[in-house]
Image (cartoon, rainbow, N blue to C red; front, side):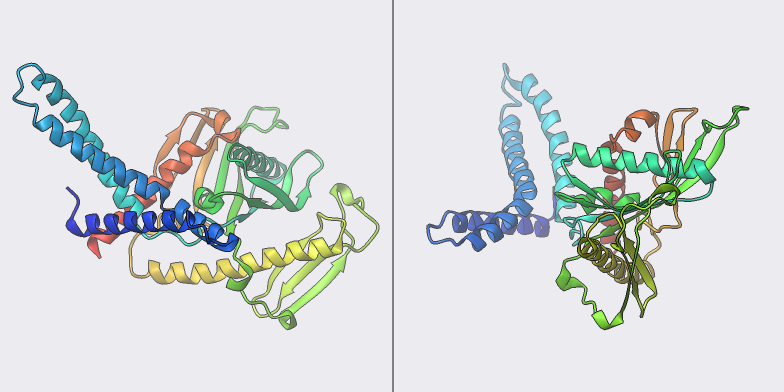
Length: 357
């Protein structure tokens, strides 16, 4: 049975949920309040549904216990009781997870950065494969993907790509993808059939609201230049590409995907804001990490997180020791099994830390 404090918190959550429902049904509600209360209700939907299922399961357990001595229904009640007690344990664990403090970034949109690492042309081809994988995953979740900048090779590879991904809870599903991804396969140019190892680096940056990051325009150096495509050919004949340098930190962002200088500048500013926000978030994470031993799931960019082995058809996530023999499906965007396993592992770590704190 969950502790009294947990049950009290759940009762308070349900009470708040009912209050929000009443506010939404008020005839005097304004459009702004509708938006506000609808979001609050949506945030509580999952935990309230789980709590109500928990209470119903408790009621059914009591009903079945009352039937255990019944000659006709006793055996059936015993079998159902076993299933219900199993359900109750699962619901208790689910409720504990749902009561954990939420990552404030989980509902945010993200910037996805992929850069080819060691391995030359093969690394660039792998970077392109990763971008296709994330694009297909975004499609399955009905997220919008917008390329901010891309540097392509002549053979279908990508040296670097930056994209904005917008939708529901993007960061919560993508935040564990940051790190070094490694591929082991025979390149198409390899005549001897020798397996090569190449890498690509993925970074996931939560996109902050404008009010969360204050940027002083005086601290920016803004350059314009002519955008160019693969092989050096010009995308257009005007200086529409933008490079912004944040002088205090040395962070440089650039955008050349749009023909409009104004749009490229807006995209570059969004990227800069995300990078400055990530810098502050990293400081915060390091402060927290200094007080605990585990750094699993921090998304450190230098951390080798996953290996894609084409010969064996397997993908291994090294942080949690998970191997799946589904390389084709995963590269086609079927990432949920991996993401769910990482989320469950990280949440369990938080629960452990909460228990010892």
